[in-house]
Length: 102
Image (tube, rainbow, N blue to C red; front, side, top):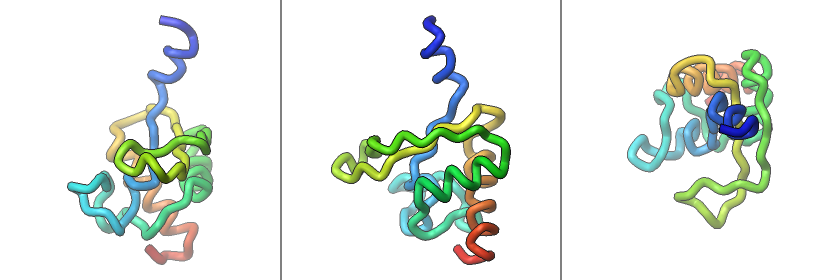
């Protein structure tokens, strides 16, 4: 395995759809409702992940496969635990940063 591949294997991809309250679980949301927000932005995800110490990196030119026409971007974070737990923490942090509003 090359260094770049090893680096990527230690990262988790976070698409905004994973945290979006406007999507159902069957349509791609991975967070619990109480940890989901309406229309999360890549910049918000990055800011929340930074405050959690997850070393986020934005990949702005990427599109989620189910919305291939919308290049909203994605964020990669350190793989330091179960993905759903990390996503719930990011969602809760975005809610906190928004002043408690989903």
